[in-house]
Image 1 (cartoon, rainbow, N blue to C red):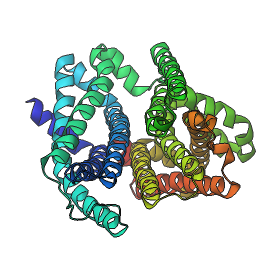
Image 2: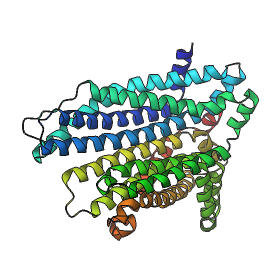
Image 3: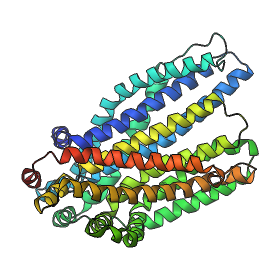
Image 4: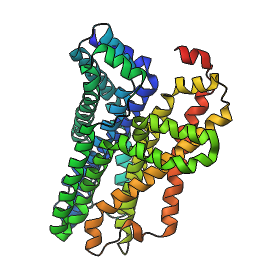
Length: 432
């Protein structure tokens, strides 16, 4: 019964299911490729070149797993939170909390199992291209061949299954424990998501990041660079926990300048303030893109001659983060089908809706750029104290390029789904 209900739920929300599936496939792809390179390096004869290749494989694997855990947890939690009404209805007709959690667990398992072979296959292709390029650059010892095998599949399976299960179950915990009537009320009028527990957890994680930064700074200088990703992840987790509060703050700051745009500006601010949980879900993945790009570019700027591997790693992970951010923004936009339909029924035209959405995109872009810059600066601080460069030292054209890419990413990922929603008849969409 639980399996059938989980499958029905996945079919009922194809956009959310496709979003989670895409994020899992992307994570499995990069994990498979990174672990395959690491396994291949460990099989090479002992040499200095093998040690360099092994260290590179370890670094790529750790960063990949860190980012994948963060990304999967965020996307899975978002998908479950979008189903508050369905969960409330299940509770109202007698479903127990354990049944709701088991349904979410089965959904996570079904999606992860379906995504794993696709991600593994794409990861093998990526690993072959990656390994071949390194061989052409002379970075691979002679005679060493790419070995994929089971280790990459097992690593990807472990990350996908454990993280998606935990992310989904944690998101379903509150709604599964709520009384049916209270759950229906929360589904009809979603809360801001700002709770004392979230704020306290965010402060705790931030305090842990400060302690970690001090430990990295006082540790061996040659180990600083490889520990930066862990510090970056700690700050991003704090941002994710404090997301609803940061979303409300971003909306409040946008209130004054957006009055210049009249009713559309006020509506964009009101939407963002009323749904700060949704706004934080949009800001967090874009912040990941900005923070990672600035941190990596700061590290590369401090080197006289960045190697091919450095440039490839920056492009790989920035691209991975950007694809996940775009995927999340599309999920959030498709969730607003009923809201868009209601605005059309009360007289809003397509042009007004697009302009409103663009204004909301400005809030997301500005908040993500500001938070990303803060996270990157705090993460590379140990390197800066050792004579390296920070985000503030990057040229103006780098900042302009990142800002332009972020705005383009946010606007395209939001407006393209909106165009699809505008083709749907508003009355049936409201009644659905």
